[in-house]
Length: 231
Picture 1: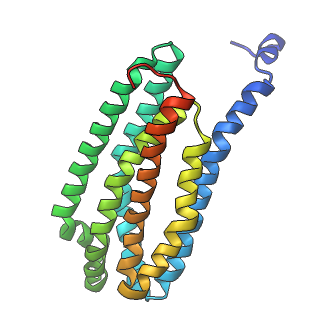
Picture 2 (picture 1 turned 90 degrees about the vertical axis):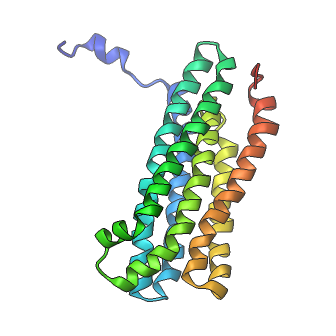
């Protein structure tokens, strides 16, 4: 097991593999950067409504992250299983993988969201002792839970497409929604409904993203990127 020159000769970088890694990694990295920038931009607007609004926003964002964990894990598993099916020359399995992942993601997200909704008073009481913050967070929570359900479907669809090497267009769709829809929509809704409107911008943006991802999945990806029997 001791390192040797033979071992080092086997682990030298391969430009073709590195380029493929960059092709997969850079769009994903850009997605997280743009997503964080959109969140920061909205947070600046939220701060204008005072410390209670900022605190309530943070509490709801934390709860939404917990609700999204099951779908994120299922989407990752769907990407792995899809890549394995394509790699072993059995793309006909993708239809079953996609259906199972979608059903599982929706089911588990719905169960967790329902649990959070039913126990919202208790959960908010754990996360904040301020009654005003908890009351505002309770009003914001419904939009966050709706957004989590919508996002669970998009996560699975994009995971399956990325597993086939289709990275660019799903990423462009996601980035476009975050960069050009989320903040402007949040700002516009805030003019009439305040901080609640800004929170509503998330499920509405996610719904638009889901519609675009589903359209690309059904009308473009199946035909152009993979000629997959049974899909």
